[in-house]
Image (cartoon, rainbow, N blue to C red; front, side, top):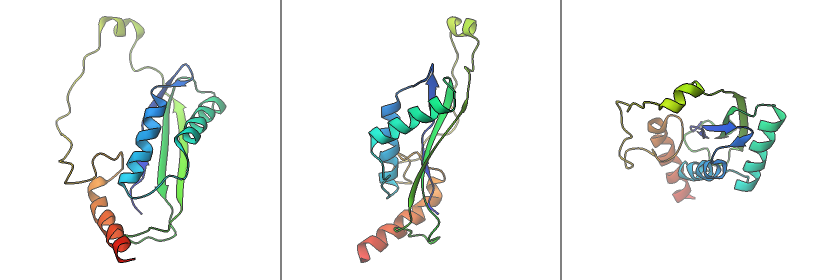
Length: 145
């Protein structure tokens, strides 16, 4: 199975921060990973709002995730069903309100993204380096069809 594509989003007071941009990037990540999410950005937007509302979590972590089904487990799984799920869980602020007023310190990670020619690093996908094989196999299969 190819790695799923997902986004990490936050809802504040019932409003998902930059929700549309996240949904557009989710669709773009799927395209990079050679599959098409069978829902429009508007449909994904509506579904995310509904999940936040129905779960009663106005301040939440929102995680839409798209993946290929398990009908075929080979490197080229072009005909597998595409799925989309949206999960939320309560996620209050990391910082005390008084501390936020004083300012928050940031740190830089030790590692950097690899060169875009090394892996599909512009896609928000799990296990992107492992996926190099799967992407190449599905693209080769598409060329042979």
